Image (spheres, rainbow, N blue to C red):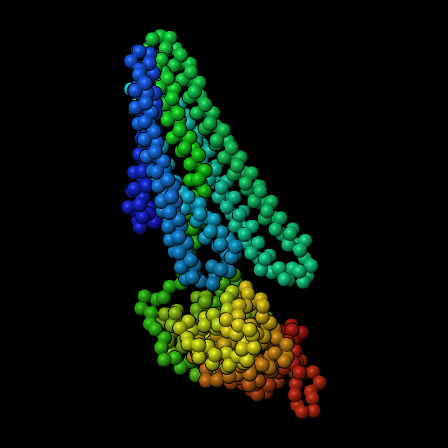
Length: 593
């Protein structure tokens, strides 16, 4: 993992070198003051001190401190820029990686937790990236220089103080593991809170509609309490760490006071040497304190990078080494004995075999949870097939590049997702380089152009987060316009009109009929009115194909599932033969299928 972290320094090698050099000079300048102090005291006691020497020494110290002023600014500014640059690159890599992760990853990971890893976790990593090398270099250099200087004053007193250092290290190592575990737990709790917030804020309208704010507060408080408890553990470990290490550093002063006094009394060291030693001991203790303080930052940074690596190590979707582009798509689809199961769950599909010829419409009907939507998700390879194969124009989808495969498939779902932006930007998502004329043509085909032009800002109208400013029908028609612009050879309609009122459904259905023209289409339907005109109907029950055929063929099967569903769905036929249908999923439950 260390190699992976260091690799992010590569683009910043020059600036990192300058930063480290500046930090080293800052540390060395700190050694000047005790040296000059010793000389001034020695000269004063010997009677050689003059005003001129005092002024010269002071000017030297002042000049060095001015140099250190600019170097400290350089270290703080450009050092942090290195950290920010590394953070930006990690975030860039992480975002690019999550774009390639399969649907199963998002099934298991909440949005809020992913966002935490991309924001606060990587901020801690950037702080470590900047302060880590700097603190280590400065602390080690200062410690060595201070040790050499103190040794030159009196080796015995230096050795006595140095004996305390291993004790300090032992205490630090003892508490390090506890701190690491505690801070990792705190980060996990923080991610849980973010996930809860994301869910609650996204569903605030539902919460208000059902007056369940107290319930949401209760759910949030569970995560909030877990975070507080995790913080208690983390800060308990940190408190013990700092208290123990600070106590050892305090012992340094006691040792100097006792040993130094005894050495002066014995005539081993002079008063100037003792004074310089007393001043210099801060240079000896300061890097140790810096390293102690660095431990918290190290724990935060390492745990943040570990969580970053966890996602980066998730296996992305990959094309086969010899994958080919899907071009000149005609649209023939074949499911050959397809079996599928989600990870760690029972098999969802069993032996699905279907053939849809070019330009045909296949309708999938049956009870909820039977596997209809899963079949649709397998076609664009959102999930890998467990067994069997799916062919498009005689080519296995596993042999095709996912980009070309998905480019050839358009999907209209019941739950429409629109991005925060303008109407035009959302339609353009179907074809990013489309012209304005193409966007308008797509909107006209989706029966929404007239409504758009009636708005004050027309196609530049902002629709809000997830299209919150639009009605369900308007959002659905925008999604249809997006697919029109994409112009795929294969179309999947996953309960595209089931959540709409009758009037809106008629408008949407007209647009969908136009969209389906000339395309191979798979329709997941809960309403029989969208089923009768299909070239082929497959009744999916319990993950298998229970019946298959046209509307007339299935109705001819006496006592069959489809016939029973259809007859149960008929309510008081009108004189003109028009039928009124009810939800097929509910009928399936009533029929016992």
